Length: 272
Image 1 (spheres, rainbow, N blue to C red):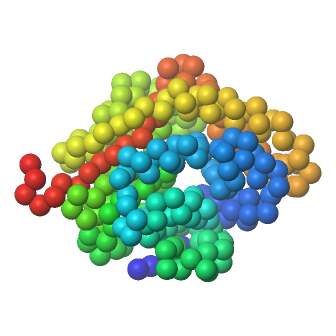
Image 2: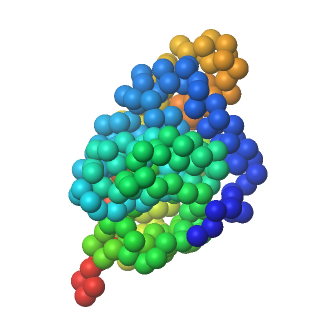
């Protein structure tokens, strides 16, 4: 299993996230932001609130003693929360060495239940059938579906499942003027289409309105804390949060944004 920074990620992504995790590890302003917006400070970068994580755990059916993988775990605080809530053993992977360093340093006393390592999702490298559940909390965007999905399914035990949050919508790379709104239904998103292509059945729960409301709160809270971010020298964090929020608000109001929780079960041998 590779321990080197993955070549599939761009240098700009590496640079941003190295800076991001170095900053949020000690930022009081960002801690306040996370507590107010998500319900607890797990250094979140995305749109999954604590209640959403609880829902993901519920639909996964993960049981105490089972084994789970968290794709794109960041500094492992969300992974640690899922581990504590479920009683399962968790492995977390991320392509940012600084994030994994923080995760390993913080969880020394929990080594029997938690393991973290640097790994690229596109080069996922675990023995077949290693996990009962794979979680992807807004992270599958970082690897081509045709590369990562077969590796995820290989790593899952028969009857195991992938549980993933996925947002589909207009963004700076695909602006409103050219965004294809036909890709918004759950079976037509990039993830849904990739799953259908492989004949993998899935369930979904819609989070589109919740995402819009979250983005509105994200904008309000970030703007309220802007002076504190600036005083810390972490204005780039605030500006990133505001940019995320405005992007979702604009896209949703133009009917060009959707969000879903997916549950994809790996068929047992012989299942039709």
